[in-house]
Amino acid sequence: MPVFERGVEQPCGFTPMLTNPPRRNQLQHPLVTRGLLLMALFTVAACTPSTGSDSSQVAARVNKSDVSVHQINQVLKRQPNLQSAQAEEAGRQVLERLIDQELAVQQALDAKLDREPEVMQNLAAARREILARAHASKVAATAAQPTDADIQNYYSARPALFSQRRVYALQELAVQANPDQLEALRGRVAQARRMADVTDFLREQKLGVRASQNTQPAENLPAALLDRLSTMKDGQALLLPAPGGARIIAILASQSAPVELKTVRESIEQALMSERRRQTVQTDLEASRKSAQITYLGKFGAPASEARSTTPASAAPFDAPVTAPVTAPVTAPAAAATGTTPSAAATAAAPQPKAAAGEATRTAKESADAAVLQKGLAGLK
Image 1 (cartoon, rainbow, N blue to C red):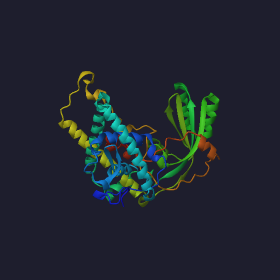
Image 2 (spheres, rainbow, N blue to C red; image 1 turned 135 degrees about the vertical axis):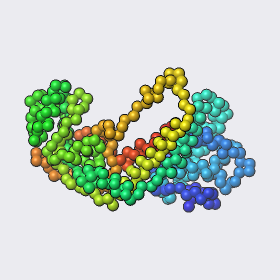
Image 3 (cartoon, rainbow, N blue to C red; image 1 turned 120 degrees about the vertical axis):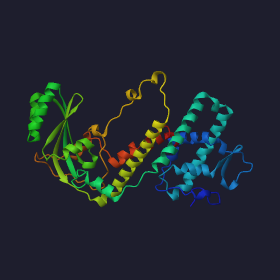
Image 4 (cartoon, rainbow, N blue to C red; image 1 turned 30 degrees about the vertical axis):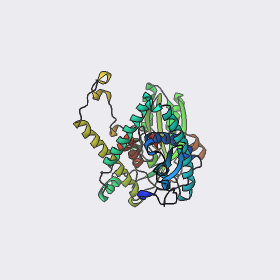
């Protein structure tokens, strides 16, 4: 069904994705407005004089230029949260914005703003980004689909997330300490059999402490932290260096909450596919760099290796995202041996460990295609 029509069905078989109803001001967001303006600068030629136009595809005439149904559909296509019941109203809102946009474009052209150096540079930069996006999308589409064996291997290689998944009730102590105090604290944490031993030591040393408690499922914990917590038992604690002191994280209690492969199969497949797309785009980019003649000039003449740095996956910090999301219910574990149960108020007030949707989300966000594609294009979305 066409999104917005003028008595006839839209050509090219275009059918937009309509899912959720839009908010009334959804199409008035600054990014949408800016996107409309940029789109107009690229499609000035499309707004041709009315002579010879197909009137069935013209939504409005602004002076001597037309705003087409295709332009409306192009904008609506970028709105993923629309329902068919809201399509007509959304289309009319878009039309009004396009009319405002066309008036602004006409005035800009009359004032010869398109000849100003900054405007010309912005137009050229936007064109480059659009072309880079198109190429990266085309390359990413060639990535191979993961096999059943790939999905099984991914699941088996991450027991802490899946087959041995746990929900953790954690206590975190943010401690202010100098290097000497930190070394003594490290030894006490390693020897402690219960958290009370650590808190007694902190009290004796009169160290500044801020305590918090919270409950987190495995997939919400940073990857490096989960690797260590998954090998620990209830009541045990670990010390992590932090600016000005350290963080002490103890497992007050934990509850086993494994998930079966069939529950997370789709998420794992998405994670693998995102990573393969990223790798495919990265491989293509590296090949292009090798075959190209690139010469750094002026102040950029230093070797590229000195100017570029990367962080290997093995060196991921403790606040780095984890892995594939797990769609399983989270139940707070029972109180630990200390008899302390994280209260709702403490959990709400306490700073939470940096939550992450998981490797599926991480790889999607880190996908080279997404990175290359989205830079400079936020205003067009």
